[in-house]
Length: 148
Length: 300
Image: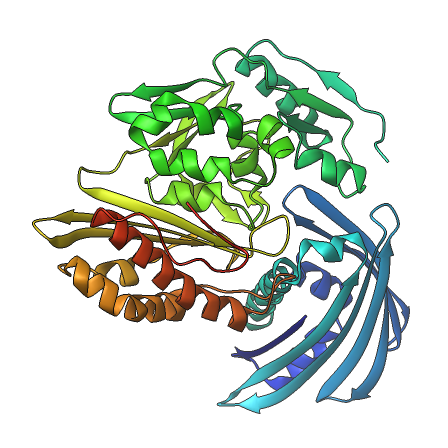
């Protein structure tokens, strides 16, 4: 699955860039994310993601590795985890880029992910929609947090 | 492997709702079990208890209700297929029920379970949309009725609250002069695509059209724009120009990729099958049975 979004934020790029590194703030912006912590600043993080698809709950401890940073413009991260009881593995690559735009800034989100295991058999369509909803909600919350 | 669970057999809907309210997501409703047991055995769902509602009094009934057809949530597909009330008021539904999955599923699988599980690759919800179906949800606190389109939120998701039980579905029979068809296509156990159409014809012209498409998007959809296009057409117009309606339906349908095919493929199949279904309905309306045959396609 792949999701791309452009999000216009009425705040200067520096403020948006700083927010991306603010762990508690990011946790609040990502639906289903909890207990995130910094393992090594700007390199490694851990977070717990929970999602529901109908009656099925997915609960995954994620290891997040920052693969590439071009401060203060863009960052790329890899996130991996596994839900032991469902036997489902999640792997994601996310690229975030901040650019000035019309006195504010624009955040470009490019996310690509895979869910392997029996959950994957539920169908790509379900997971794609859920990923889009997740990133749209993230965008809304981030906008509110940075502009406010 | 099926993990151990406690089995509750409440005597009333209120009692069942009470158990659900106490246990929340640790409990799951169980009727036919045809969908539930699959995800339990796969380990995708873990619950501490099952609440068996298939023997609740009145929940499996099928009856006429003030001009409507009321199907109890615990009625099996086979009961729907054979019920005289269904044949008399919504005969298309009896024919659709006859072709749900396989005979083992039809013998135990229930209408309510099918709707509440909300598998996007299912027949019933698509066909029910043509009858302006509403569902009744009951809990200790009371009951509410919802349009089926508002009940099914997306794949495997409905607006049923944890403590609620789907008790029945209500269908509004079509006006006189209406004929319908349901055409489904699939290589697997579940359909890849299902199209339900109905034409109400009076004085030689289409006075109302209904088109629903299932399995293509996250939930079954009525396509109002494509329906409107048919208004005023003669049956000869329908037979000649059904392809235009198919194209309009394909443009409007919400399609997603899944294991049955890409969104693009499903959109194009919508175009083809809306046309085919309209041709069947138009021929029936003109008093002709019989239709073209296509591989992996069921026409009811």
